[in-house]
Image 1 (spheres, helix red, strand yellow):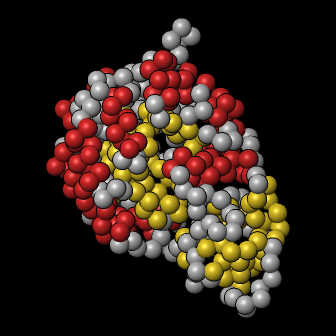
Image 2 (cartoon, one colour; image 1 turned 30 degrees about the horizontal axis):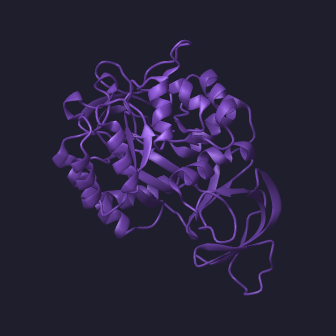
Image 3 (spheres, helix red, strand yellow; image 1 turned 90 degrees about the vertical axis):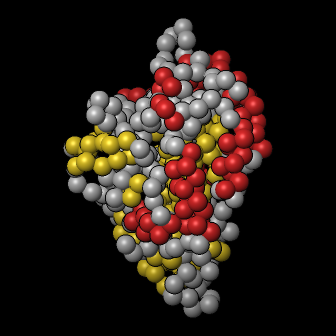
Length: 379
């Protein structure tokens, strides 16, 4: 069923909720406030808030699937699992790894993109590396970090058949300016991360076309009142900024500060999830690294954080709790802003012409139904 008539929803519209109707035909929203003239199957959403499906631009896996090693079928399976948590669109984040392993991961992602399954739509690939600062390699093995290599980037995008949509890189590394220009020419959006960049280097990168910052506050130069660094520039300039709202990667007070400065248009919730998401504590891996998950926190042997076990529905509820803001005020952070960042004109909002990516929530914030392009997701 990808055509239906929705009655009695509290429908998200322009940062508020209105009681109206919604018509979906062939997976696309065609009308708001109309009658069911075609006698489409009717869904009664009485008592439910209906909001845009979540868009997660940064995920390394979940439910036992690590995206550096996932097959195309596993990626399709993961799409169903993610949809059960409200994610209707996502990027496959391939972490810094050996060239041969990165090539394999890209190849499998392309198969899943071009022959999709049901559930959350895999929109493309996010490369997290290898053009990072060795000082802030974080989870990734330093031996796989490289200086700028335009030929390698061109090679990756060629085997990806143009499906690399975004790349995290450090703008201070040698050759970064030319690399950014090439990436943008290849249709790749640049996000600053794993970086020791100064405030000026970050501002210069923004002016060169790098308009996002990866997991703000994590794996980057810290803030100082005489050298604000990436953090200062990210909050001062209109960067899109990723936030991992799990209460572990960033203190709630920091998230409140970021929300005050970046909402409503430039704050993006991400999961940065890894393969242990949705599974018990234990031994796992994130790309080439072995990690241990205890109390839901993924860490390397040295105790440093290594991804998260967060889901997007939980991230949104956490953000509501941390900021004491309403659901309607924060929805841009879970969908609209990521769509803007990625240039998705057909996703991230509820309006005629948009994909029917819809999340139903009850008064307590629990998900009751999820639709991906008009098809109900059932995992």
